[in-house]
Length: 317
Image 1: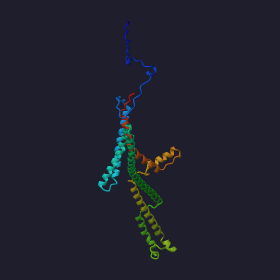
Image 2: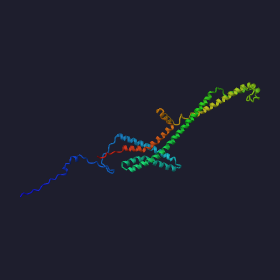
Image 3: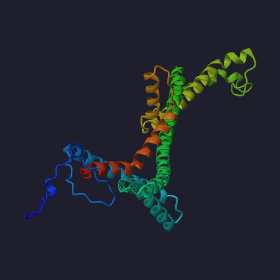
Image 4: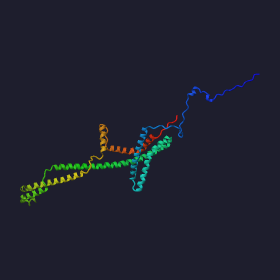
């Protein structure tokens, strides 16, 4: 009787199972990014230009920070009526400025960490701090620049008035041709009085001449008295002229209170062929705006610098 041999089953390892062509062409799905996941990725090398630009922006931000803190702290302290109040106001101004500088970088980092609500809150607080910083900077710039312009305008107006007085005095002095001294004319009057002795009493010393005979007798005296008055007026004009020139000499050569605003307005009108007409006060507003906004943006500039200097890492494939 034949013996049945058991069927032998051949086991094929899983590693040798060949995948079908469509299955082999599929790629595994990329891993999902999770905020708390840590990837072993190599840092991207930063270029020298990127590092240099980040350092320059960082230095600029530090400089603007120092200027802004000094300006706003001192301006806030100026409102204090006592030393304690001034110190408290300065501390409040310093704290607000620090928030305006630090919050942009903190908000950017929170945004990178996917903390959207915290980042939005940081930006909202930064806008409030920025508004207070701008108010303080506007007050400081307007006060100091306004006082400077007012001082220059006062000097320019005083110089212009003195120049006008000098021109008037010189014009009046040039019309006087009398060259004799007052003492000389007075001596000549004394010599001419005996010729009018006959009518001296009747004319009250040739002061009330009503008749032709009296006029002829007092003619020389009257002419000399007229010359005496002209000489006195001449000497008075000379004294006023010397006084005006003495007051004008120490004044600086200032013709206008705000030459920057005046020239800028003229240049805008010249470049635009008269189509754009700005007043010096418009230029003054633009200057105040620029001097207040740029220092207030120190936090944004510092955020740019930290972003450029931050080591970037590539996401794994």
